Length: 71
Picture 1 (tube, rainbow, N blue to C red):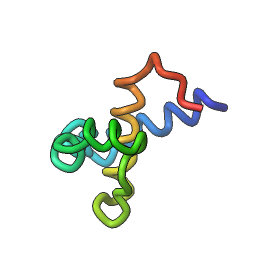
Picture 2: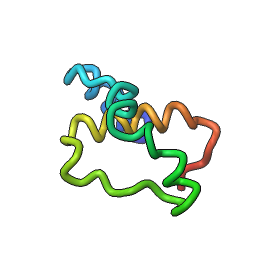
Picture 3: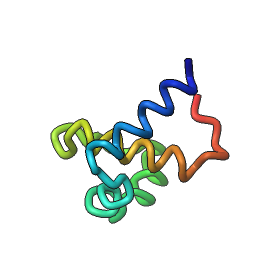
Picture 4: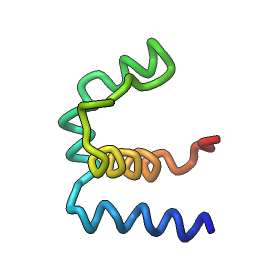
């Protein structure tokens, strides 16, 4: 089940042509580290990213930090 979900998520951004790193670079990179250090969580991106962009960034971040247990 989890493998199917992950495969679907990974394929979905490819189908929409959204590059998670590019979305991250444009919308998140400038303050990501600062916000994480100050608030221990990322600020809301509600209204700033569409569903495909949010999904692409989430996948990119998840893959980048693959050794971290996100529970």
